[in-house]
Length: 457
Image 1 (cartoon, rainbow, N blue to C red):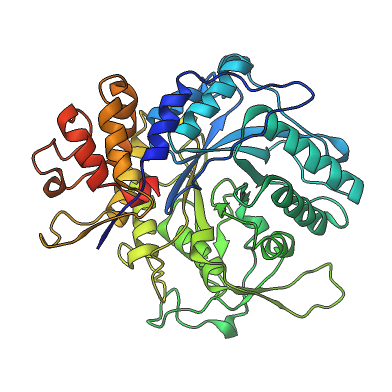
Image 2 (image 1 turned 60 degrees about the vertical axis):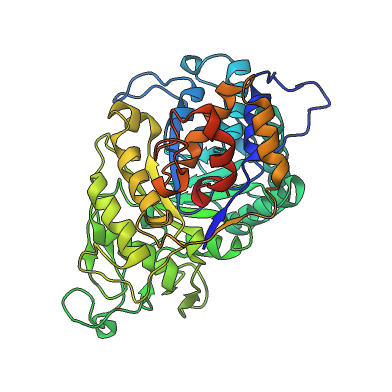
């Protein structure tokens, strides 16, 4: 059965954004409307440089991302100053502040999620007291109100500094969710040595890396207590964790002692399975040296992060596609095969949107094709498949589209690409299999009869 998501809200938002203006930034800041629908799964997450890069050069206006395949755009980076204060300074190459705010509104109206990333290579996560937690929360909330961000991403590359750093950061995120609402987006992007390091003794090996048995991720993992404890504390708040499997050159030792290297299918699959299946870890600084069991995360909360270049050990798009299909369908695997498949796996993070643009967007286009193949009904489906309308999408939607199509043709056409790819049997002569260029006469019927659940819901 095929489910048609509602498109009316998206179309209305696209029409409205044409006249969007900068929200009030006075003492009484305008309430920020977070994206009505969170990023769908699997998600393609990319970082947009708010800085000049030696590889890609100057950054570019954020609004240009609207034509790309990225679902979630992480603005990199905010700066975490002393005593919990977080600030953000826009790179001049990105345009004016007014333009940047309107760019965020445009991306959100097009169904993308725009997130402020805190930390990064030059940032630290250090909240040493309740007062600093309060400062962190209020400064993030102010930035959200000013710019319209949908949430925050915690990019942890240098660990969590100071006593109580984990519990204080957990408390801060929980306060933000209470303050800004359940739809406030939260993601984590920890560096993989901070999450998964060490390995179990040889006695716990159970077949992975040479044997035929499928391994259970239950060995002891040392030196990763901070980030695993952080993940455990944010289970109820977390939208997605995409561990960064690049930039170390050390490789990853899995719980059965198999060593996997950066840029391979095995590190992406093996590392993800440690979070999907659970693992045991020790905290070297704890009084008790007994291992703690990290319980599995729900699949929709787990993704993996890769580099698109820039001197890192980056996999090509084929490797990324294989890792994704291995986890979702059990095909394309390397030496590691999951015990079960994860149809609702969270997605892929790529560093970065700028590197993708530098490469002609070849990465995001290739990965998007795989994501769509995993979530789109086959064109070879039974001709008798029932098309079921979402109960939220009533007849007034088609009437609204028809009434406004002449005057607002451009805005409606802007929404239609989010419906691709469209199996030809559903267009019924009203347009090609791709929504681009569809005739006005076919718009209302096509939009009301068929939508891509994975792109709009």
